[in-house]
Image (spheres, rainbow, N blue to C red):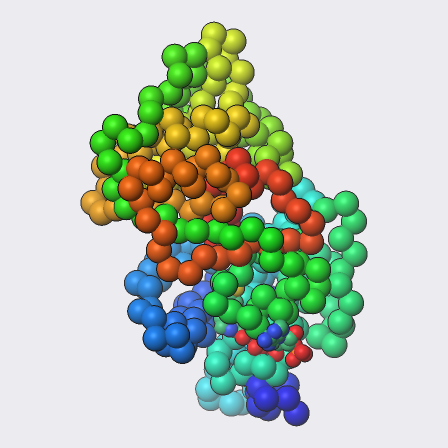
Length: 332
Ligand SMILES: CC(C)(COP(=O)(O)OP(=O)(O)OC[C@H]1O[C@@H](n2cnc3c(N)ncnc32)[C@H](O)[C@@H]1OP(=O)(O)O)[C@@H](O)C(=O)NCCC(=O)NCCS
């Protein structure tokens, strides 16, 4: 028996149902908090409502890649089985991305994280056996995720399947100094998504930009961001109207995702997005270390890096990240 105890060894894997989401949230906090405690770091503020929305989105859109592990139970047992861990991934075009993987401390280091990961892999589905150890056939696509740089276990686990750490992802927080981010050039027009002329096929435009930068389209996410009221802005070249990119600004002050085909526009696009919302607290931007235009603009405007960076890990280089700002670690 491995260190994870009898529960980990005999845990039963099944698909996550909506009713399981509160238990998954409990697993998330119980497994994350000790990471910060071990480093004597303050635990980040909790936001179970947004975590619930995220897991719901993943279960709705990618249910066959959303799995949990629970303790075995006997027929007639009055106690429901305890959820010990869960993992969810999404697949867009040929890109697979692990969004969340968490195992309760008492069940860690017993092979459960690996079993859950294997179920979420492309082709991992219902028939997959937890004992399988081969990396999946990736075809022409890519496997990716974002790891915590303070977490060698998950980083090592994913890297053993070729999902190796490549690009640091910093959290920049603060208040840009007035006038520190320039205006857009005169021939670049910014239009809020909801003010676009009906002739503009927004879905197709966003899909083309996403495919050019990220390698996949993600209509489900754009629909969710619209439902959540994130303000989306399309940037176009005047007078032809050629799309140059898009960006979102949330009322909370979170900026992103931002996807620009021309990265020289970053300082001005950030200035435009920041100017569209008046958040109650500081602005927050996730910025890949390789997006040098955005990194420099944000730091010179007065934002500061906070906490430990994440690391984008993938089976092959992901060059579009140098012109991109993700929405979150789980749904870049
Ligand atoms: C990360 C996590 C999901 C892994 O689940 P787990 O059940 O503990 O892991 P497993 O026992 O299945 O696999 C552990 C594997 O990690 C790898 N690993 C562990 N420590 C490692 C290290 N120091 N260096 C490199 N690889 C390491 C090994 O491949 C190991 O497998 P092995 O024991 O067969 O060699 C779990 O520990 C957890 O929830 N941690 C806290 C939350 C977290 O960090 N989640 C990931 C967010 S990115």
